[in-house]
Image 1: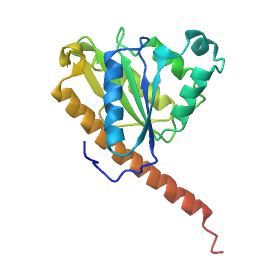
Image 2 (image 1 turned 135 degrees about the horizontal axis):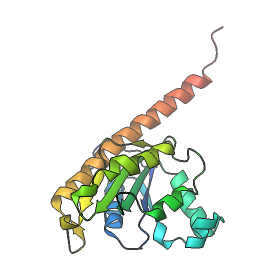
Image 3 (image 1 turned 30 degrees about the horizontal axis):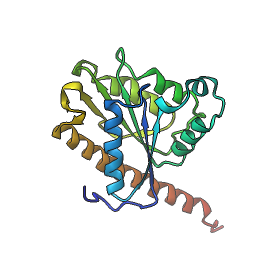
Length: 197
């Protein structure tokens, strides 16, 4: 994938695979998005919720696996949040990770909502449950998330149409992240200007 825009090479993108299982379709999509960011010159990290001990997530004990995940999320400019849809909402494992976030933990970050489900019946879960979860933590989500159904995977790989949606999500989020960085820089400069009076 060619660089779609001028990308700050130091920018970190962290993916969150929110399935309770280490291997899942939602993780595949998150990993493919991260690969596109890497091709665009970004640094990437992957947080696999299923690899974090359950007692650490539930007790908020500050276990090394949990703390490492939180550090990678805190340092990111873009966060890719992936989850399977269970009973019309995101995975409980993902919510348990979010419960460990300090208040407004995703403020100033761009978020890409990614979800997978058995049928298109659960497509609205992206906008009705996943997007509000990220917004509650202060994230700015891209206009359109990515939702893929089981039938759009062949031998574990997403279809060409899904891959195109992944490309669009990356391009939009890079532009949005660059805009937020520019705005933050302008605000900081304005705040440090000496008073003319």
